[in-house]
Amino acid sequence: HCGDYHGNDCRNIYSTTAAPIPFRILGTSASDTSSHPHVLSPPLMESLEEFVSTAASHQNFWMKYSLVRDGANISTLLKNIRGAKHTIIAIETVKGDVFGSFTSSPWRMTGHSTSHFGSGEAFVWRMRQNRMDIHNTCQNPTNPKCSKKRDPDAFTNSLLEQVQMESEIEVFPWSGLNNVVQICKPGKIAVGGGSSNIEGGTQNHGSFMSDFNGIANKNIGEDSNQYNNHQKEGDQYGFAFAIDSDLQYGTSSLCATFNSPGLTQRAGQKNKLVDDETFEIANLE
Image (cartoon, rainbow, N blue to C red):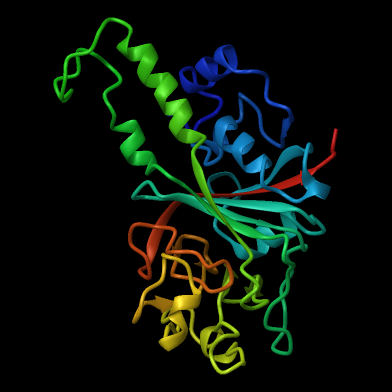
């Protein structure tokens, strides 16, 4: 599908109808079937590249970890990305949600004395369109599921539409409400979380670190007007996203760190992952 940037449809249409992508994709190749289906497509990579920090811009994408290729193990993930400063995590669920993060601090396992790390260069993101919905659009004019008649060029046009939809993302930068950017514990890896500074002037890190399965969400109170339109009275917030230690299930919630909504259709609930990729962005040849 269009997410498989080494496929024979979307990849070719993209290559012949747009300017060459301004970076190299390393760590995988057209013959690397062990990594299919990919989460990041070239149109999606190019959109993300516009938002990364200045130090990471105009660099190459190097796939250091793939769930389907390297196995579902947090130790393998951390070993493969050890020392990588600028990383993009890209996640796809079985329901077609595609989302992730950009961070500027190397991922590392922390002990009990350190609950979080990271910098304000980080952001979380999601595709505007659900990928399953994109692929369910009518690509073949003979398809009986088509809701309307299409001209003979419909197949090509639909591929071009897929490329466009793959490039449309929402980005949520660091809000400044707390410093809980990256979390890496034996039971989970997560981005964003904690309380906001607007609640009594303190941050509550202990409650959300205590239990990944529960995600220990809190309610936004009277100061919710300081949040953007994603939040309203009574909403719950927690991790922007968190993945359990076997990297097969995760959750996403309303998050103070990035002032972001849940990044999946089933916000606050566990989602099974199709794939999880981690790319280092660096000037590597």
